[in-house]
Image 1 (cartoon, helix red, strand yellow):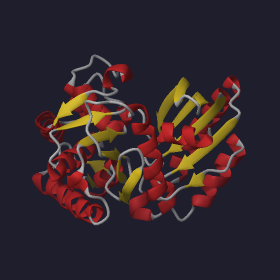
Image 2 (cartoon, helix red, strand yellow):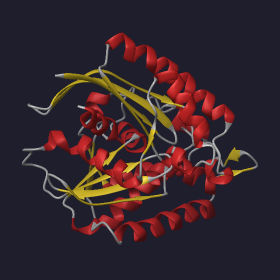
Image 3 (cartoon, rainbow, N blue to C red):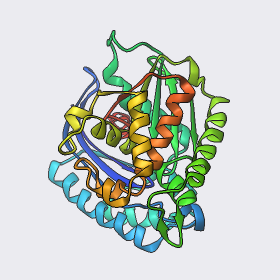
Image 4 (spheres, rainbow, N blue to C red):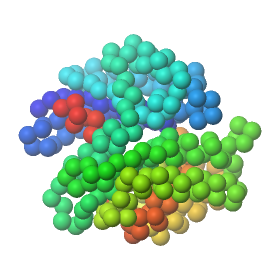
Length: 313
């Protein structure tokens, strides 16, 4: 048994998992899992740089996580950084800051590596399930990018494309520094066109339509599940391995895209940091389900973070 700590720093959030990993049994015993919305990718799509205030929010979360890691006595730590820090000209400022706080250098991984970790984290515990046909299509809808991974026991094909919920919101829904509330039909159509073009790109590498089970990861998907179940608060146990039909995803997406900021913020399971970007994230999910013909999405709370933990163990 090895006690490990995994940190996943994405475009919208930074997350920590401290767990005991037993490679012999394939069990990952969770000790601490937490998430902080830091919006590291703020304006990266427009400026090509990480904003000073975004870096400071991220470093504040890192200081909190360093204390948790020390408290649990994790033997090994791995810090993985994804889309926003891949794209930024000043990523060295980010690397130095993380190294000073946590004592480990963030690994700015490729989209393909990100996809491998997501697949491992999402499917390792599905082994032996007879109610979920293979191959799986694991879809990780992040803030800056979305990963598509097809596989059975191992990855067969993977592709990362730049259609995350933050990127789509900032590219199409922000005018004069404010998010449209609600967006116009033209803005929604522009997001949809971007997503469809990205799906065309992904489909050159990944056989999206040949998969039998769609597994959805990350905050946009889990939030849609929480809304679908009308949860009185965010409940990981009820969200994990829930199944949401395509028609229900369509209903929720249409409501999110015609609702106001106040209406979305009033949803009890909605994290405040997702209020402005959840509409774009849900639209990405809906477009994927329509393209693949998936009648439902199996929602997983286990994702790239769990895959990183296994890579350390």
